[in-house]
Image (cartoon, rainbow, N blue to C red; front, side, top):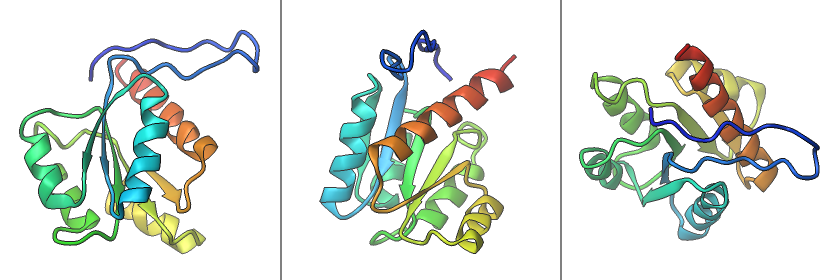
Length: 147
């Protein structure tokens, strides 16, 4: 994982998540959902790659390994669970944190995504605050795991 700024919380009003240097892959369909995920992630300073489905995402990760993936579970072609399996089966990609993006928000759905190997869970429609919380949590946890 690349190194990026570690935000400090001097005061809640001026704190801002800073992910300059990080690369985030957003795999989502339809376009309006992908656009919102891309915009919110880009506002943190991260470079954002986008794909419509698992097949496009596979092509992207063969060229550039992201630091995090936001992965919609239901997409055309190769779905989210199949793409997650693809990542986890490859040594060079297996440790990438992956956050599930889904309309399913019950406790059982959350447990299923964790059991499947996801590192987080976002319920659609996704809010900016929920996305930023997932970004902060995943990148904070990864930084501390590297110590």
